[in-house]
Amino acid sequence: MNASGGKQPKKVPPSAQAAGPRKIPGLAIKRKAAPKSPEAPPTKKQRKEAEEGRQGAVDDQEEEELVYEEESAAESSRSQPSKNPSPPASGSQGGGSAGLRPVVALKEPPRRYGWWSSTVGETSKKPRMLIVFSGRSREGDLAHQMARLGWLVCSLDTVLPTPTDLTKDEVWDEIKKDLDAEFFQAGWIATPCGTFSPLREKPPGPRVIRTIDHITGIPDPTKAEAAQLRDSNILVHRSYKVAHKLHQQVRPWGLENPDHPAGKPSLWMMPRIEDMPRWQGVDITRFDQCITGLETTKPTKLYTEKLELSALKDKRCNHEKKVWTREDGTTFEAAHNPTVQRWEQVDGKMQRASKSQGEHTELLSKILAVAFHKNVDDKWKMEQLRKEML
Image (cartoon, rainbow, N blue to C red; front, top):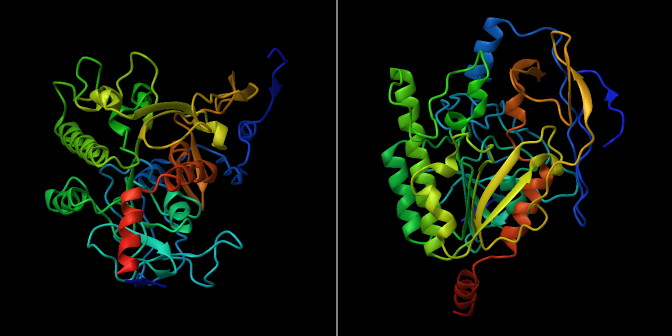
């Protein structure tokens, strides 16, 4: 198979960028420019278009550099896949970061499901990584980082050029069969958290549909809410199954979700998920993603196995507080400008600020990739050596 304070707060404007991230020894940070803030709140039509995530047409999906222009889709649990995703950026093999090995999509992937990526060359001897709920493909993401370290990566999400909907039994059955056969050497799971989000408590957003007493769903949902809960619960259960299978095989894996305040519903309270910390070898890591360059705090919690993440563990926001101004003229003090009910203009389109802040920074992806690469399954390496000797 071949793939070609105490200090006085400083006043700053609403669009000002948050303070820089804490430096982590041995790792460099590369931040994106802050998106421009809109001059006025989006119209009803603009909000509708942003939520639907309309994108341009594409005629084909050639094997090219994995640089895409589609909108961010961190919350992609049941967002409908774009039937016309934006095409890969055409041009040189070395697009994206200068001097780095190009990452390409496989013309002939080993499986029908997923969006498969690797560096150019032979892939049959590479360790395989499964990324569940990867979000959009973009330069510097976890898939790119793993591919450049020599891995063959399968990304699963409804927003990718080859969309994968894990609520469909026929799709899940294929993936489960490969998991049972130890086809993957590692896995990362970023289960969609929209139905758990505390932002639902902030009007005019959707209402709360999970509570501490009703963690699997409120007893009186509307028809639309019931469907949303059903699909979300399926995704949570299948996230568990992926992690459990890799745990049984003693392979590196990680499960990621927000670290909500006490008293708020979260993925970590769901049946079976709440039992995972009792598995032998499972580690819990809590940190704020702003330390890796994200423009908002974003408290995060991880369950992992066979991953050394001291660069993240217990690292919390230590940025200086500033005075921010809301659209109504009132002010508040915080280290970062919250994303709650805030809209921004990205590539000429209006979208919720929380979308772009739902993606890993390049630094976070690099930390995770290095941790995985240091723990390539010894069993896999010995098997490859045996094949070469034969």
